[in-house]
Length: 123
Image (cartoon, rainbow, N blue to C red; front, side, top):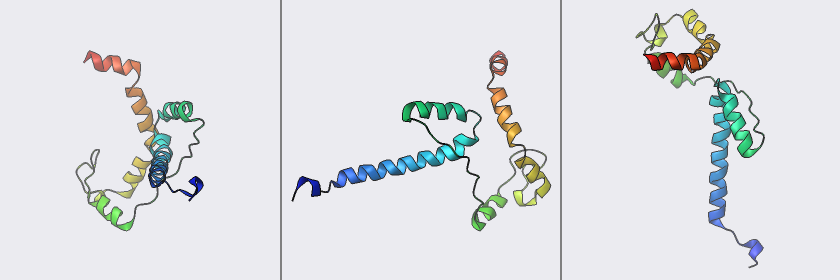
């Protein structure tokens, strides 16, 4: 058998594992990093290390029926409806919370600002 026809099973496994890690990284970038206020820093770092990294914001996919049922059974962790099962929280409140994502991002950035870091260290 010629060298060109030899199948290197280890190499195939390494390449397969590499593709799986790359796929997980792309999913991470498209999900978590794209939604993170510091995502630009992460994307810049990846671009320097690996070349241009294209990030497309992909909306979360809807929950399956069983995921939705499980989620509804959880308790609301905060706010006016804290400790109530999510299925009992008014839809208008849940929709309002969904729309507050930009404020939460800005709040996280604010709390990481030098001003707030100094205040936290002073406490």
